[in-house]
Length: 129
Length: 364
Image 1 (cartoon, helix red, strand yellow):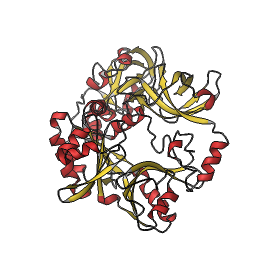
Image 2 (spheres, helix red, strand yellow; image 1 turned 90 degrees about the horizontal axis):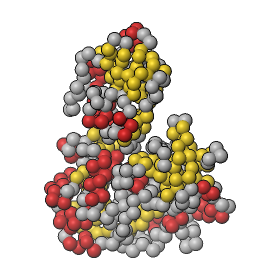
Image 3 (cartoon, chains in turn brown, orange; image 1 turned 180 degrees about the vertical axis):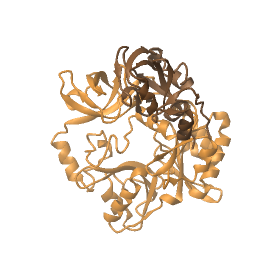
Image 4 (tube, helix red, strand yellow; image 1 turned 60 degrees about the vertical axis):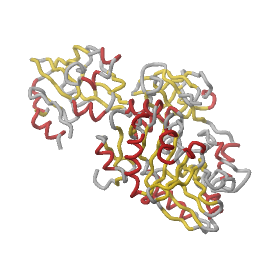
């Protein structure tokens, strides 16, 4: 069985996004488990800087050769940075989903929403069966 | 994946590290090392595909020919022993129950119908219901099936079965001995490459699979999952049931007029199919290449530049061979001309695509 790197300090969604919190800025990407399930990523669609996103709602799309999948925002807020390099080189998401494959940075509206997310031990239970 | 059926090659897939998914009630490998590498390896070397999930329906006896003629749209009478034929099971409304390959084991009295896994139960019930006095049996569980496809496929198969396989023409098959059992080596496939589909008794399937992998090492043989099987067939614009064709499709609209033989025989739905064609079909199946950045997927609507809905996408993917985003879909006739630009609605945005020549990938 594959083992996945699931950093303790991050938050996770049930849809397999990770959220790294630095004060009020949240960096978002997809987990190693998610990229492994998707297979080779060939296309991503991300919001523009300044866009508003809502916790649990779609902020973008990731496509493998096989299918299109929605990306869900872990918190509500304003997109302040987008990893535009992924548009030309979406394979980075497969190679390094937890670092160079980050997708957006959100200035979050309220820290309270973090309580709705999973921490590493719970997320581990979700993906390691 | 509780309740999903396993092919005789299940353990082989697990040993090869395949990612398994449920498909049409079967637990199948979607990919091993990676879809794109498997796709490219099939186009350049040789790929092995487990297609044991496909259904096999046997039609035998003095009424076998009458029955298969009645059930299918292509001319069965023309088939000699050892010949195979792409065809359609049609319904009374002039739609398609399934597409299939008919193998002539013994002229007039013994045929094997190879049908889609997702339709096997439906097809068997249909064959039983519309049987014209033949002995019909569902042999799906008895057969494993391995597709060996690619420029080096014939060389690989000849290493196991002798040089006689090199002279088997397309859409012919050769019965052969394998470890005390009879296999059928059929020069058919679903990739656009040369190769064989080998029908092998289930109990011997794993042995054959491992032998093919072993004997083909220097040819670059590798296993290929369902993911690449789909991209390979899409590059050739081969129809997939549930995408390009279904029970409401007139075969002529799908570009399958070449397997409809209304002049030479009667078959289920014949008059409806012909009437549909003569009344004029509104839409036609075409190949599209994305001009704007985006991937068209099944079900996405197609629009004209003056915002009329003019069709629908049936399959779409990135083409691993070309690097382009390609799609197949139905378009109103007036837009179905080569070079015509249309718009695909992808998640609310209308993106440009052009009608192109197919197959997308040209093979000799």
